[in-house]
Length: 393
Image: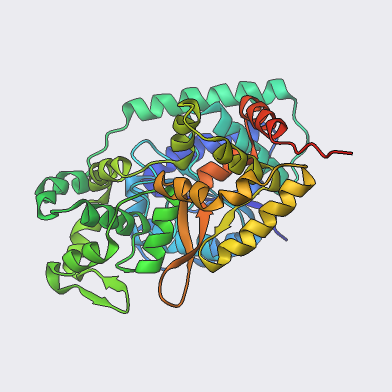
């Protein structure tokens, strides 16, 4: 029977676990429902005890209190692997020194961190816990009161807590000047974020597209990064040298913010570019109709080359449906070219000769146009009205 709240933590963070348990008890959750994994001796060995295994089997929801010490414990990392492998929900609670940039292992940045100094996060934790163990209903005033108590206790603990971080001290030995191009810096950022030594060109390309990061030569990055410490590029996959990977990943928390500056410099959201073009009032009527077509039909991809004929037929159907003159269907190529030049779309399919036969809208532009602001919708409606075909009778 799954009826246990399992709290994974390092024994040095026992006081944090204790205030969480007090919070649960204060909101009506029985203390017997909570199991803390830092039993005597657990975090100084690597073998998971039978008592912990039994509790994990009964766990309805897991909490991991992440700290510097947690990540330095072989036992805790083993326990984190079990939490990751199991289908039971996991709530990672971060102490101040932990952020998405320095999470690694099984409990990495793919998980959303929660903080005990956030009312929203504490409320989320309570809701998730009470639902998981079918806790009795508790008055909102009681929950608010216990939330305040928890935050005050947490604040006192954090004010008295001393952290010495040898990882941060070692970061001073890292010399990023050995990276001579933004290509290297951005791909290394991806490697450290994923905490993997091998990366494929296709995965990096997808990440660049998803995050709308432009003007990065992946081949150049792979070539240069492979020169460090006998790295290898094989079948469009970079395997970073082991020593280099260990050196950079051990100092990821201090390196990532520096590398992110280069990522940010190359990030251009299509939605922002579109807004700039729209407010400049430089769009032609055909281009405005092109936008209206995309909005009306929720177009995500646009054909090029021989695929353009299919797209134009689709536009003609839209024009007929709206009784519009064939202005857009006659000017489709120039409208698509504008979107290409302004980096509003990216190549998403190619001919056998490697030429783009399809372009797709970047995700930020899809979000903007498919949730179109009222003022833009009104302008698009006006331009459609101007091009309605008057049928003589």
